[in-house]
Image (tube, rainbow, N blue to C red; front, side, top):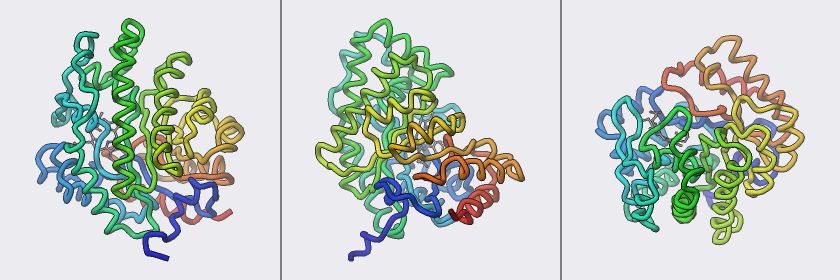
Length: 348
Ligand code: CP3
């Protein structure tokens, strides 16, 4: 047995084998709540420089692993590297979040490139190769992309928006032009994810952060169907590719998402209804989640109780312990340690 074929608990769960102690990692685990991240972030200059310098990206990917020994490392990058590789202007202003050139009319959509310049993403692949070399073989390496709908909400508006109104409006008014953006994102996301698998990723996650604002018909068209095509496109070349979907806020539409897309696991947010999830989601796929990131800031007995709730709700089935969304910058490191200790003391 080669070193790299060591048993990875997270992959075991994705392959159908529940673990006695659930594997655990956190969305956005590399980030501003860590002093060593803030230090390297300052040294790198811009956020995209951090993403596209393999030495730095590999280092910040490994920082939370060294501190907490999570069961998975997620490659440090961003969902907006795809619009960037498509030749769109993408900037991260300090304290303001991403800024892109808005793609908000059918005429502008005509100018959208069909194919990304994948040479621009080569540093991400190089960072993955570096991490894979340094990572304990028991720890899974996760690659990712944004779901087409969520990436499109930033491309259309040119920035983050409270309710994703510009993209929702464009999808109603100019459905054909909007569908073209989605198609371009589907095709390029497939290629990008395949590149990440070749570079050493063990599993993939599709982040659909803004799925929850869509009414059922739109959710079917802009969240489920693109995710289904991405899963199909990746598996056409890598039939056993392990894929986690995260249609945040999907609520009652989660069973339909799971059934139609063919993902191996879904990441659920903290508002998910446990009985529904157990009976109609976890009976088919693994579940990942779903601690409220705010209770991780609060700590104390509220945190213990919330960790116990996640375990009581889901650990009797296939569970990957995680947050319901990304960790927030103001989270105390001691609370992450408290959470981990409690999850890892669990036996069933
Ligand atoms: O999980 C990880 O540790 C891997 C890295 C990762 C980042 N972004 C790094 C990042 C991942 C998986 C993402 C995904 C991402 N990016 C999503 C989907 C998941 C989610 O959390 O909802 C979205 C919507 C984005 C787009 C994005 N990137 C926004 C809106 C912002 C600004 C808001 C913010 O948190 O600052 C970013 C910047 C960003 N991406 C940061 C990090 C660590 C902060 C930048 C900094 O250090 O200044």
